[in-house]
Length: 304
Image 1 (tube, one colour):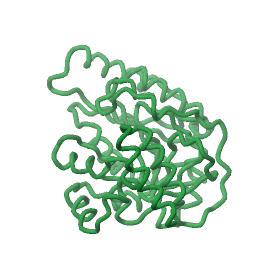
Image 2: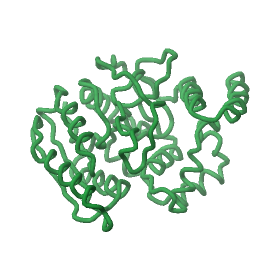
Image 3: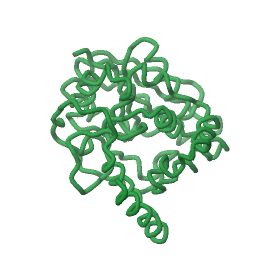
Image 4: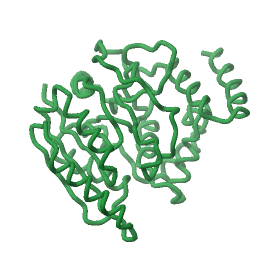
């Protein structure tokens, strides 16, 4: 099995970055993997404190080890997370046919690289499979060992060049297609999470999310992502330390301490899984909204 190169995107969180690198290097495959670290630059109006954190982060990535090779790409200007990831992923996939992607707040299980590389290998020729996700929401009900959902995700993921080739940076075109086909309710996981609103806000410049455009691109092409039944990724950035994340423990999970058992699945969406994810999303919403949407979910569930 040919191991996929790993891309890690960092900015100004030295402690988080150190934890991510420590966990990643503990994976068995790390010593035989190529690591690319993309370090974003300071904003023009960055304070001395922020510039010091960026400097400390860069010192950490320079002194870290445990990989076959390490390539550091430093930006002297601030690109922002979206442009950093879009350009960085494109840069690697111009040279390689697959990639594993992490950010500086995503701590992985020791089995993360095993799972990612096995899944990339097994589903390489399945064109409807666009990506592999290392994170799954803290759903308490029993799930299959692995399963598919329509779309794509962004917390510890992998794809092939053929997958990233369908990524559309133009949020306006994506939203127009979703609306013209009347897909808003389904795109929003049966109305349980405001993905359509998030995409509209990206178009309006209220956020710069690359992830909503990645999800929309995959969703509109009816592509699928593979998920594990328990997460191999823990997001440690929900602590007000990041630019795009507020403080929350709603997404916390217990890291899977074994590799999921792989049995090649029939290529189709696990509809029950989508309902369970929607039910989880509802738990993060306001009480009135939860009650209203649960009635919709019940009706849809009874029809399926």
